[in-house]
Length: 399
Image 1: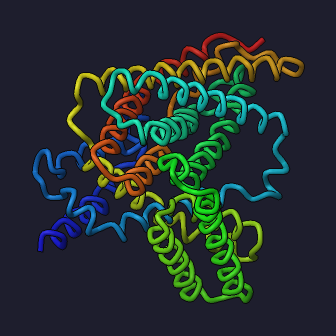
Image 2: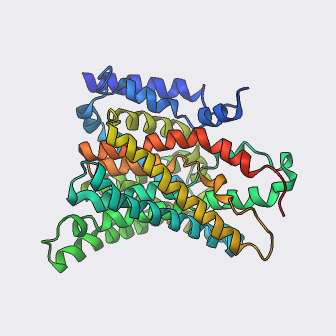
Image 3: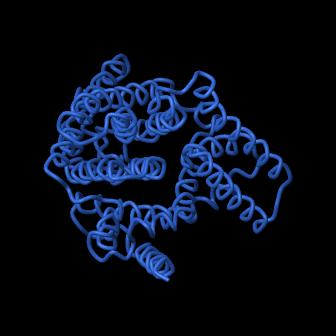
């Protein structure tokens, strides 16, 4: 009975909140950016979780696992649809280089710092420290577009080139995080279990890849002929459910599996526009529902977790600032950008939330809850500090 009550109240809160959030209300810019990200639903999930009202506890989340895995699959499909090759070819190669440089450098900074610092200050088991470092680095790599979207280029005519570059980077650099997430799940057995034979390691790596390839071929056969809207909706929902369920059975990432499926569909089918419109029509309720479930996983912050969150923020900021400086040097021949371009890359966005929840589904336990809490504390602080840093970047004129 409790699972039905938890499900109904969660859906009610999401549908009610959907009509109240993501709207441009008259409020200070930093508060508007915080409001438009839906962060308040994290605190709502924390309130409903086991530490307060206990409406959605760990057992309830496990029973609702098919729903939460479908949410991750839906987000993966939607993210994969952003990588349509004909459209990506229109973007300058220097923008791809800039996005790759800053995201990989940020990942490397966070991964290295986590590997060497977290075992010293925290209680993370040795067997999962490498996986934890990979996931935290993947969550740190992406950049949000919320703060950039609130700045119209016409309002900053002297910074149009800077805003254009930042928007391209923030739309692409999430690819690094999602690829690292996929690598983490593909190599999870090899990382955590050193007693496996070479054939077992290869099998654990290839089976999910073959399964994803088979699903792609199957769905492409379904989509060869043009379908009516109702039939297409049924096929898309079935794709998300079937692929996410298979990923759960294989102990693989539904987010990454559906991301690959989305990339395949958007580049090989004729109905990509109709499918994208269907996916994006429920994007915001899916995102809010994910935030509520993620909020339920938050752990009461211990002193070492607060220190770890501060260090995570520091490592990520160092990576973004270093990446921004290198990007500035790479772009110097055409336009001289400010060396602290990284000020505009601090906000993290929604993809890290999906990566963190996918990590919890694949590696459940107290450690996953602690890592989620550490990264979310840093994300919330980023949401407050990033508008200030972006404003500092946009002061003055471009050279």
